[in-house]
Amino acid sequence: MSIDLKDQYFPHDYNARGDIKMQKFLIICKDRGYGIYWAIIEEMHKERKLLNDKLTMQTIADNLRTDVEQVLNIIKIGLEQKLFYEKNGYLCSKRVEKNIEKRKKISKIRSNAGKKSAKARKNKSSTND
Image 1 (cartoon, rainbow, N blue to C red):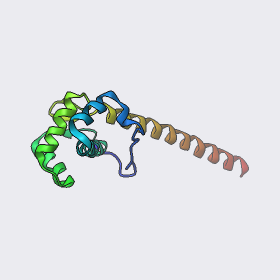
Image 2 (cartoon, helix red, strand yellow):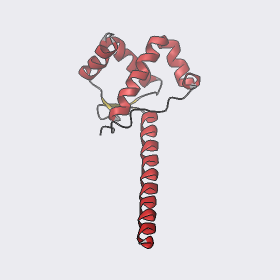
Image 3 (cartoon, one colour):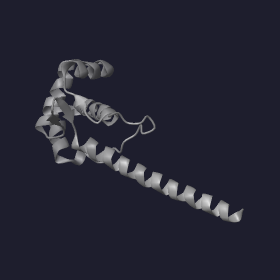
């Protein structure tokens, strides 16, 4: 399931580095790994999950101008630190899933409010006729 192009953002916690799992990840992967992690998270926000195969990871590596082994290593460490999880051959993130569900909920609330407002305007204009 891909995300609508109008939803080209996701919340990035201002203190993501403060999370103990991320602190451990940073000790091992350093800043370059942190950047690769966030690039993977960006891709996951587009698709919700990523096929965990070498070709997908090669594509990410090419986009980041790095080698696939570095991306695969970041994923391995991310899995070990529970920043990612694997399900049915896909790389997933609870963080991403939570963000997408929150965005869907907000979208539904706004849609319902818009429909309610449109209905109220229609009723008001029909009573003014």
